Image (tube, rainbow, N blue to C red):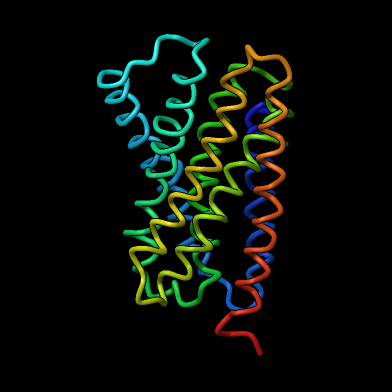
Length: 224
């Protein structure tokens, strides 16, 4: 039970943070829960299916090949996981009437991302123990949050723009890019010290996420 709490605690801290940042028009808790649940269950199922397909179509057996690990990070893991989140935000949250200001893109994308991160983190923490829980609380879970914020920033803009397709895909591409970069530096750990690149990627993602949050706050339709 304690391990389970350690696994989900950073997820809910981030959720509360984003909920607090939604200053001017809070989203219905029921809808937030549904998006979290879809991220925790449906996006995991989609990801698992896509992983299985990639293993058949594009096997990458050489763990010491930088090129193969690049393909794995960006085109297998990054693309698969972010796409599985994207389609939920795009075809469920973004169509909802409660999605009525640009900041909502960040809120719902983070809810889906945190649902995904919760399920993923539970598996990793139950296998790896408290050390894994602490490490991932400051790395993988915040990373998933930044991917969600960056995706949601553009999807929030897309809802109220004539360039909906372009902006939605820009959000997806940005999330894939940061996810891929973060994982790539971890996958090529056979190169000494290269893992530091993952932390650089995470820090850049956090800085950009803070700017994205501030911009959408300033442009809220409900700001008095």
